[in-house]
Image (cartoon, rainbow, N blue to C red; front, side, top):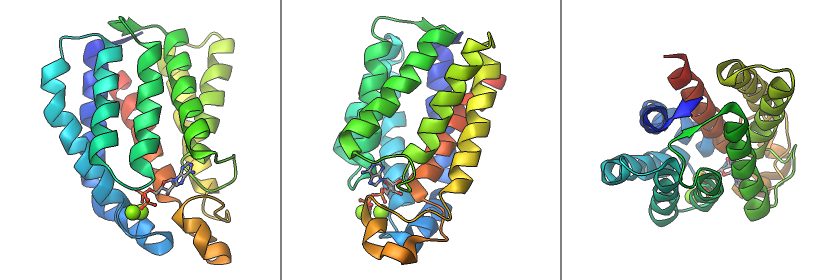
Length: 209
Ligand code: ADP
Ligand code: MG
Ligand code: MG
C-alpha cells in the first residue's frame, strides 16, 4: 500500500535527488546532448515542490496532475513534455484515491510508461528513459504475479531499472538530441534514463522508511 503522505514524500525525495544530482545529470547531457538535463529537471521539480502545499490535502490523482501541469509549463526540451505526460497518465489511475494498493501502483507505473511511449515514440533500446521505465514496469508486474507485496515488487523494479540504466551506455541513440551524434552517442549513459532511475529509486526509498 502507498498512501498520499508517501506520494508527497516521494515527490520531495525525488526533487532532493535531482537537486543533488543536478551537475551529474548535466554532465551526462553535455556528453551526448546540450548540457541542460540537470538544469531542466531541477527547475521543474523546484516548481513542483513550491506547488505541492496547495494540493497536499487533495487526492493522489490531483497531486500528480499538478506535478504534470507544473512540469509541462516549466521544463523545456524533450524531458518536460515526457515527464509531464508520465505524471498526467499516472494521475488518471489515481483519480479520487488517497491510497494505492500494489495492483494500483503497478497500473500507475504502466500508465506513466505508456504515456512516454505514445508521446516520444521511442522503443526499447533507443537509449532513452524508456530503457529504464520499461524493464522496471515489467519487473513490478512479474513480482505481483509472484504475490510479492508493494515493497518487494518495488525492490525488483528498481533492480531492473538499475540494469536498464547501465544497459543504455553501449546503446546507439535513436531518439532525441543524442541521436544526432550517431555512433558518437555510444559509450555514454543516457541522462533521461538516469533521472528516471532516480525517480524510481526515490519511490523505493520512501516505501522503505
Ligand atoms: P533536451 O534533449 O531537449 O535538451 P533534456 O536534456 O532535458 O531535453 O532530456 C534529454 C532526455 O530526454 C534524453 O536523455 C532521453 O532520455 C529523453 N528523451 C529524448 N527524446 C525522447 C523520446 N522520444 N522518448 C523518450 N525519451 C526521450
Ligand atoms: Mg538536454
Ligand atoms: Mg535542451
